[in-house]
Length: 191
Figure 1 (cartoon, helix red, strand yellow):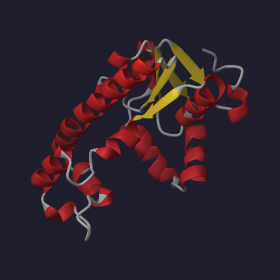
Figure 2 (tube, one colour):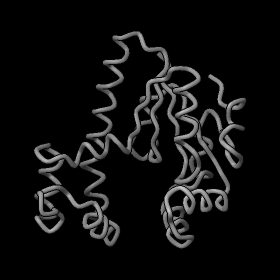
Figure 3 (cartoon, one colour):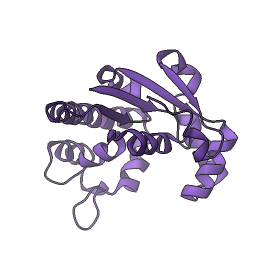
């Protein structure tokens, strides 16, 4: 089994590259964002840790973690963000390890792990190669406006909060420049 990690900042087109690897090569896909959401499920140990730490003020009327309320607390205090990361990242890494183990038994040939936080979470240690999907800031902002309805200001603040491509480029086996249209990637994304 070959495991390829796909990373890059918000709006770079990671999901487009991952979808192409799935469609073109039949890759199994793990999206770390989706795995991270599992950590917030009521009844899980990670849910308990987060609610014990922050209290009921982050819950909605159904007892679910309200992500906006949690984000307001986390992004206002670096220590709170560090706490949430210390709960979520090990959970996600463990879950991904389990999935890799399961898929190895089935004879899967290609597994792709998509995450914006490849190196920060340690997901890179699970990969045979890490590919960086890169796009100019202007392109990323336009994509975020069109696809997510973000303002330019919000897009810039999210981009500024993330690790820059320059900080991780030397740790990546490949860089996929994605400033164009999705169909232009077909000849570039080759395993």
